[in-house]
Every structure is written in C-alpha cells, then in structure tokens.
Image (cartoon, rainbow, N blue to C red; front, side, top):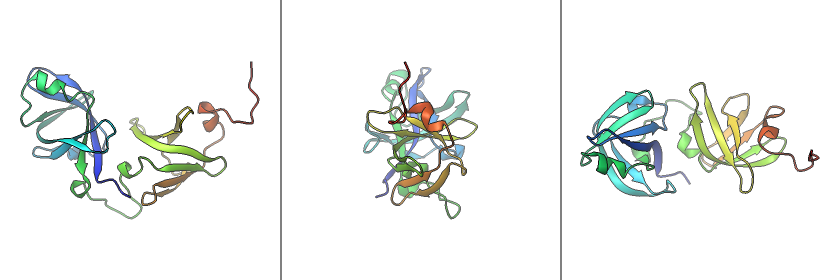
Length: 186
C-alpha cells in the first residue's frame, strides 16, 4: 500500500526571534517549498499528521532552508517544531515526469534483497549527500548498511510492492556487517 503522505522536510531548530525554523529538505526539488504550501507536522513515526501548517515564507541558507508558517510568529512557537518531520499529501505531490520514476517516500519500508546474500533489511532513510543518494537499510539487531543509489548497484525497484533488488560490490556489505560464517578475528 502506498503511503498517503510524503515527507518533504525535517525541522532542525528555531532560528532568530521571528518564528523561522531551520529545515533540512528531504526532497530533491527546491521548488517544493513555496508560499501557501499546505503541509503537515507528522507524528514521531512519520506516519500520521498531527498539525496542519501553511508555509508563509522560505529562504535558502547554507544549512538548509529557513521556513516561516502562518500562526508561528516568535521563537517559542517555532521551537516546538524542532525535531518534527513535515509532509504533504500524496495528491499534492509534484508529478513524476517519466516511466520508471518513483517517489523516494515510497521506498521507505521497502524490503532490500541482495542477489547474493538475500534479505538485507528495510529502507529506513534516503540520504542526500550532495554527490548522490544513499539508501539506509536497517535490520533489527544488525548495523545499518549504507547503499549508494546507483544503477550499477540497485538493479530493480518496485515501489508498488515495496521491494528492491541490489547487487552489492565486493566488500561493501562487510564494511557494515560481518558474514555469519566468517571467522571472528581477535
């Protein structure tokens, strides 16, 4: 099932005294944040909206974006948004431009299988490093595996079934997790 909301930003902290909030964008489109945008403050799990917010201003800064919202006019009001994730409804998302494209939000929770090793875990985050995107793959009791989102590594993506197949290069898996049949060195 596709998620009804897409995460578009993560509120970091209040900025200044006029209600600005420093936000890390979770989208690759800077035009996503515009005056009048209706977005939602999400619960801690990022699944359910807890508050409707209307964007009244946006300006880029080296650390991210400084956003202002209607009804949030001072530092104290902005401070309560620290740590909150911002989302838009699926029907308000920007349209995809071509076949084979998908929203990164649809990858969250996707099962990741390596052609050689089997199930690696679930996608818990997609990080934008500036030079490329990185999938964070988590599995209970294991270290996270960071996988570059490259065509040479990510072979298949099926957002409808929330699954993907990867072919990790030699040594990448071992950077994060030890193979169960590998001897432990002292």
